[in-house]
Length: 160
Image (cartoon, rainbow, N blue to C red; front, top):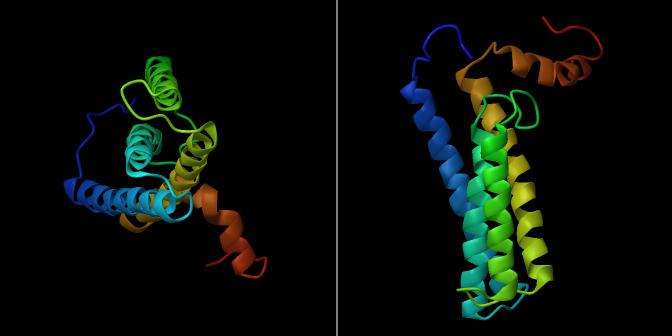
């Protein structure tokens, strides 16, 4: 917890949320395209696939956006948030696999949607880190995360 109240920097929030929102739209339309052209799903199954995409992608985005640093480093999400997301994901997967309230999807497509979302989660986190590096130069997490790359690019010596 920060010792002082957090001051909202709305210009940074607007830039980062806009870029990540655009990535989310690209992610969703990309999955729709793959479901239609690669997996040749019928429209009812496409709708179920997009439902699962919105549920999984939205929740994974919470893990990406809850911290300025990489999503896999501390501070970790609270157990309440984590288990609430896990429970809703399990419910959504069983809804889609068993056809509860939605047309059913094969397990292979469900696995594909999840793999697709995990890849996009990593992409979104990398974009988030890059954006924070641009709007907040000098943050310590950025320096520690990218310092080995900077040293390697500088030919093994500390860059000026």
